[in-house]
Length: 64
Image 1 (cartoon, rainbow, N blue to C red):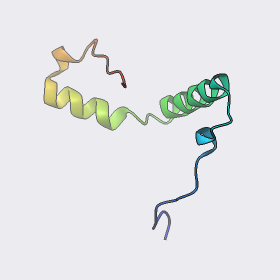
Image 2: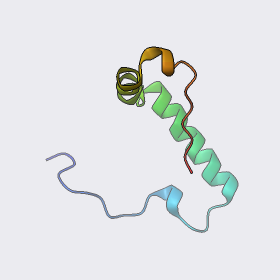
Image 3: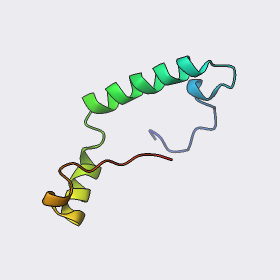
Image 4: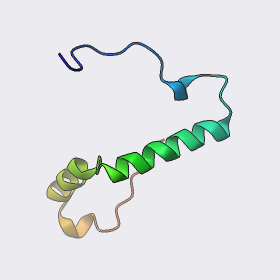
């Protein structure tokens, strides 16, 4: 029954009273964890397959 329903509790980083520097630090830590766990790997493989390896060598995707 692991993750059988979506959590409704706000995450710690969503607290409005946090300083911008604290939020940036939390997202930096999250980025390190995601790199360590290779969280982007499935997306990177799919994009390479869709766009072709030659087209994704220096691809950069930015959030708006």
